[in-house]
Image (cartoon, rainbow, N blue to C red; front, top):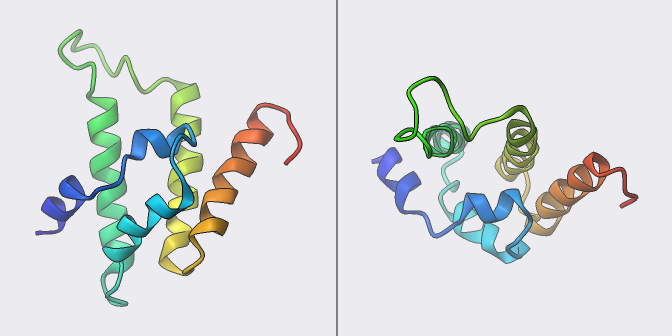
Length: 112
């Protein structure tokens, strides 16, 4: 059931990675995290499913490891997953979104 919820959630993690969506898009993901006892587990499952999906996205090209999940892409993925983990303890989707923007700006050497 948890994996089904993760796969059918109306939230585009790839867009979030690149800050191509809006903070309100996080509300769909936040709706999945209502049960205090399981929300951290559900989010970690969501992130694991998303990581596996991204890392395996070019699996048909080679079986010699992930062509997609380079160090640069992992760094960005890690920043995004850290930002999403804040959803467990915060209702402020704008603050969660801004934390990703701040990390992306830092990566580019830009002020935020």
